Each structure stands twice: as C-alpha cells, then as structure tokens.
Length: 166
Image 1 (cartoon, rainbow, N blue to C red):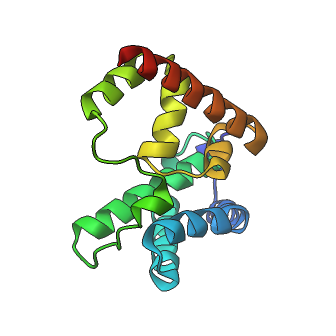
Image 2 (cartoon, rainbow, N blue to C red; image 1 turned 30 degrees about the vertical axis):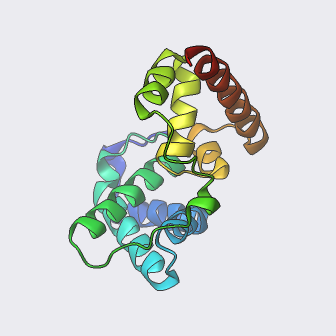
C-alpha cells in the first residue's frame, strides 16, 4: 500500500500524515501512557513520534502503519529516557505478574530459543517489550482475539518445554 514518490506533493504528504494521526493517535498515545504513567509526557512523546514519522514518511514503504508508528514511539521513549529527562516509575511487580527472583533466567532464555519462531516472537513482544494484545494485533494485522489465543498457545508451549527442562 505504498505510494509513488514522484507524484507526491506537499498536500498529499500532509494529507497522509493527517490520516495517520487521526487513525493512530489513540494507539500511540495509549502505548506511551502505559509506559510513562504520565499523561502529559505521553502526549509530548506522541507528538514527537508523529513529527519523526512526518520526517520519515518518504522512506516508509507503506507497511503496517500501526507497527511502524509504534516502533517510532518505542524508539522515541527510549531516546527520551536516554537523554535523562526523567526516570520512568517502576511498576509494581505484582501488577506485571513477574515471577519471584528464583527463576533461572538462563533456562528461560534457552526455553524461548527452543520455541517455534512465531511463539517466541509473540512472547517477546508481550512479555519482554511490553506491548499489549491490542498493539500486537495492530502490528500484525490479526484480530485481538486471535492474538490472545496465539499468546495463550505460546505460553502453553513455553510451559511444556520449561517444565521438561527442569
């Protein structure tokens, strides 16, 4: 769903950015809000995300817009944290469902590597990178229900392999 650069005018680029903004603002802002827990910071970072997207629009090949924008948003957040503007508050471990610290991290990584690529990718997106099921759905073009089922299956496969490992 790309476009021909040779026919792009300022008006069509502005229209495309406006369409992306209208369609994906809530997704991008919600993604950033869940990570920053600060509505003002999330909005600032979302605006910065769309500014960066505007600059990068000519290089965009028309892939999944939600995935492209969420990647830019994630990188914008990482840049923000690296610049040291503010420290992000750490979420409560109970809220994240984090296992106790006696989990063997090496065994977890080895188990992940033994999973099929699709299971491994889903588990990394959800549990390591912190994307919600709706965000993964937007990134992959699949329905949230199918992502929920796929993550459930990936967790079950992981549990089977991890249990056999121990």
